[in-house]
Image (cartoon, rainbow, N blue to C red):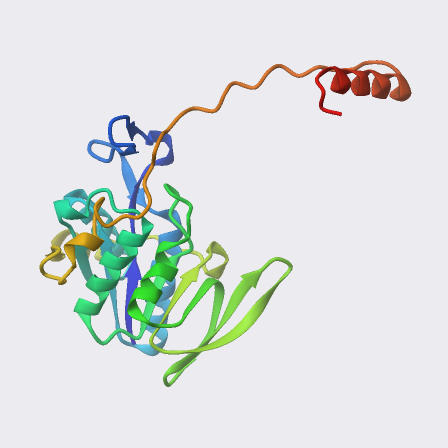
Amino acid sequence: MNIIVCIKQVPDTTEVKINPDTNTLIREGVESIINPFDTYAIEEAVRLKEKYGGKVTAISMGPPQAEDALREAVSLGVDRAVLLTDRNFAGSDTWATAYTLARGIKKLKDVDLVICGKQAIDGDTAQVGPGIAEFMGIPCVTYVRKIEEVKQEQMRVHRMMEGGYHVIDLPLPALITVVKEINQPRIPSLRGKMNARKAEIEKLNAADIACEMDKIGQMGSPTWVDKIFAPPKREKGVIFKGEPAEAAAKLVEALKEKKIV
């Protein structure tokens, strides 16, 4: 199998900072990690390679520093790492990001399966994976908690639902997004770390993957952040003491004063 894993380098949750002029995340000089949900995608891809054979390629879109995330992916068993990096990609929303990644994946050719984490912790939209599938014209199943089997040009997966799961057969090539229930990510081995240090990270720009310039970056993003602000501080609550009936009467009277009821 030729498996592609999409990963994203995100700011550590304790170090999220916003540029007040552009309303975008400040990434330079900020401690970054692989998006935690993407580590489950990496692990599942490597497990599939170990079971069925083939190759795993990790692909990411981001600034040059995202190379660190790709090297970490190599240490976890990924065979090839590709970074889509270009100043023209800056400011991409989920639509433009999905378009760019789809163009990069098509450049790699002969793809059997694309795996993404269910969402990124810095945006929490869960839109990029399905967006990639749409741009590539392949079927997509989200929130996969188990891959039951891969047989010829078809696979069977369990899609997590509230209170249960769906069993879905889908043809390959396809894209799935995975949840943390699917596996337990491994710790990189010493050999993996050595491979990561000497790995060649392929870098592709907008021209290399034949992007239409009006579909990438801020210019190609149909959504944008208009304003960022802190929510108002919550007022101190009121405790109504006394017997239940007495406390309830006081509460009702207070709500009437505020014209809530």
